[in-house]
Image (cartoon, rainbow, N blue to C red; front, side, top):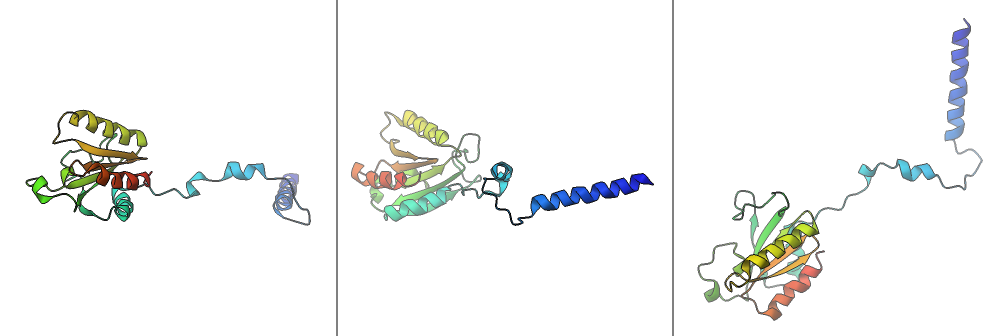
Length: 179
């Protein structure tokens, strides 16, 4: 019979100890609680919403009023078949620019960068830069394919070569606000 009495006594002591540790009582603890920071669950910390091409266009078009959204690229209509692939863009939109003369872009396919441009967003800034470097290398020396490319963080803003350098600078300034 001593075992149940001992177990009950041990339980009372253990509960009393927990209650004493957990209560604020009259004592003030001026020492920082070093375990608090270590025990915070990181999954409850708010996570910043990743940038999307649509979000980037909204910001960019506030700076460049001549830009108009012309398309949202999906897995089904991506002419490059890159959307969602490893190290490639996670979202993409295309836009037109009213400063480009219709005669200059006659016959261009809808969504063509020549009509205005495109915004591609990647998981990492390194992926965005790699894509810009690739485009510049492939189009080098081919005047019909040359374009302005501006990388800002994870976003790549691709702009038509039909815009003058002064006009393209509007996009460069707008792109700077994305990263």
